[in-house]
Length: 123
Image (cartoon, rainbow, N blue to C red; front, top):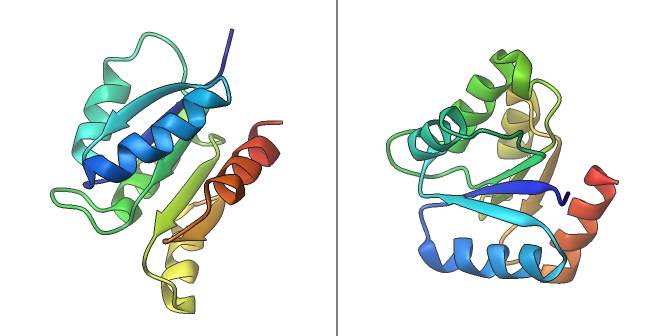
């Protein structure tokens, strides 16, 4: 059974691009447009999620709040979470780490770099 990755970003283009790269590497992919949408999809999911890739700046619920909420839930406490954001200063990276992110990649990014990080974290 292949692993499932949830991609969360308010840019439909970015969700499609990341999803295409993941599917080409054999992963199942779910997409969400913001943190609230992600939590709703996770609540209705019958199987486990193996990884979350999220943006930070989104409407309704930003990436920091999404990560913190996931980390409070035992089911997602150890799930790898990659932040994929255009925010590149050290303060944002520190806040992401404090919220519970596993990794932080800056947009624009190369698909090969993202897929390497996904492979590293999922084994």
